[in-house]
Image 1 (tube, rainbow, N blue to C red):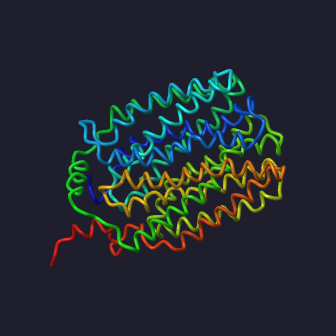
Image 2: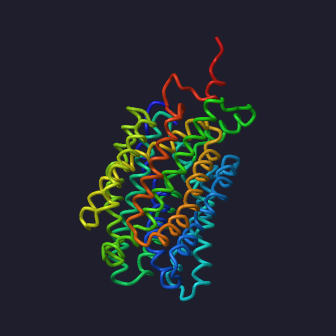
Length: 412
């Protein structure tokens, strides 16, 4: 792995793993609440069911990240989890909308969510494994660009296909794309032996975070929790807001989500570049401020095209947050614990997703209208911004050397 440049080709190819995950979750979050509506009436019950994937993510993604750091096979540390988990996930996913009873539907929902939780941390760990520290914001921009392409496919094509053939067609399409993405990883991605050897060597060295690094890590992860409380509520319930408040059909509501995703895709790489230039924390704070300023009008205004315009602009600011946060966590981790710290990241992000569907469902059931969705998001984004004010580590600059790297500095 060259320390002074970003391998664009390799970054692009490894991004297919994130594309597979992104397309699956985007369609899942947009259409599964609508499928559940055929069996369940209460919003809070739908919200609880939608939190199952987050429960598994919070429990098993940290575990699989930790295990992948310690895995040694001829295929590498991360790829074995992907090769086993992705095909099972794709098969379960295709069967979700074909179930005619709640028990059978829940069986395949639970199977999909569980297996997905076993390979997501390893697939995300591939990016920092193969990318030098100073270029991880830019690489994460490319990875999220591909994830956004998957989300656009899920939103636009999914909306069109559900209008033509009902829910089974877009879920089948997504399963096929997931398997094609797996083929790309299997053919083109080889984990570097150097990464495994370096991790094995560092396991013998006791590397501890400084007090300042621990404090920064805690507040970064607290920020992650709050902004995913906001984001997941909007992502999960935007289709319900659009159908019940704006009067859209299911397909049109799903395609409305694409306005947010298109902006995220278009701005993913620039957001990474901006984070590298002005600092990741500064970029995240700008993103959170912009999201609050855009969502405040949506509390009061009910207009289809204004909603779409504000969602598009919101996607630009969400890119600033989403692209630069994971590299901050990985920067504190050091090379030997990338999978473990990505597991921490997902523990907090999925903990938010456990809390927010049910919590917002209770609030919405009590208030009785869907515009409270954007007030809820504004409060959570604000709390995330306050958390980031206490962060002092996570940048790739010469004066901010991680504890693990400090141990490797030659003595004078």
